Image (cartoon, rainbow over all chains, first blue to last red):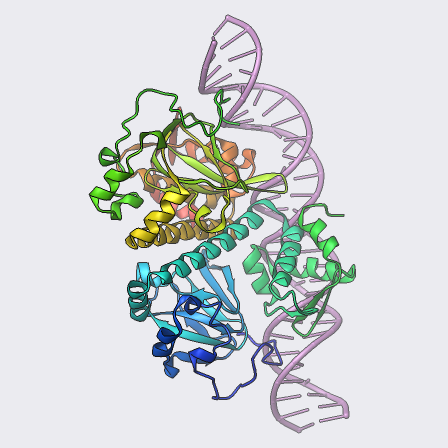
Length: 245
Length: 245
DNA sequence: CGACTTTTTGATCGGCCTCAATTGCTGTGG
DNA sequence: CCACAGCAATTGAGGCCGATCAAAAAGTCG
């Protein structure tokens, strides 16, 4: 259902089967769970079959399904959603280096549905392997703890936004937050449709579209084929704090 | 505000009557972080000064303050809030056996303001002690991980509720959730004011009051001096799923 | 009992949703 | 290269839900 994107965007390069499956050369190894592990352990882990290139729109796992693996995202963007009352709520956006699905370690099933918003490269980590690493390398627990804490903070921020701010302020805050993840570039990918942005912020397509269009009209943001540029962060900042008009 | 609190803040000194400060006899030891520890370690930990009895309304720590300790709640209810746009959002309700403030382990500061909603008994755990336990007893990390995962799920549920449901459904869902925590009793304490319920659910005092009054009129709930009884869980369940009227 | 706070109820307003139609974009096939 | 189909995004009109403003009623505690 995805694919407004003409280009694979963030992909390191290959569409094709040519993946670099060597953990030692993994571009996100240091920031990943394995950053904490000794190099020789990482070498043992090397299992080409566990590296996957998936197309945009692909569902990687589903809410309530039995969990067999956690994933580290090497490239692309993934949404984690849960469904209530027939409505989907995006609870987290996964970007490069993030871990997802690790809740399977504790509960045995996934808490979300994970869907690729762009073509993605993921590293699949079977739960039993993760369990073993956890036992053999206590340091791994620190890494997991840090991941969990970061996830908790993200969701708390989301609840705070949705619970306290109105539509325009939520959208402005989200754009600023998102730009913070790609701060090094002038323009940044925004692989969320209006519908998905709404599912994240607890708004309808139309409301998101209206405020987005408004921001563009005022020159606060530019948008072109799935990429945006923040033109006036100050203004967005003010709006996100409720000083509208 | 809650009860006007005559007392200072983090006073080590227990105000009330003599507490049973022995960890070995602690009613929540098995469910607490210490449940994982060998008994002889727990004995060493025994430090009477770290057990506190605090009055309702007491602020235990504040958002952004440097964190010196985590806490286990032995008895009572505590709200964890964050502030945005001048509005408070309750992000979690802490009940017996829950741990709070452990984020200080990783970030060095608290992510919320913790306020007692009832008189509470807490067990104070200095961060350095926790760090040491973490190093010396890797099993402790499992306990922490489980706590973090549970907190994450709670907040995700909150975000899901606020993001996808309307007022009446949110309130009904909350009442059911809350009754789930005191399932063994027929009537259960609800130590949240209408204002606080609103801060949790992203609603105003008046909206909460209106729906609450409505539920009572219909006989779905009874309320008497801070305690409620769920009379018709089925009906509330239906409402929480959007099948109103 | 009397002062204060909290809750309830009413009336009105505004923001966001809903329904509906138009415009714009992207990829496809003639 | 253009026409067209199929979506996504935009824009408009109207209605409902919940916020806001205001006041009365009920509960709490000295």
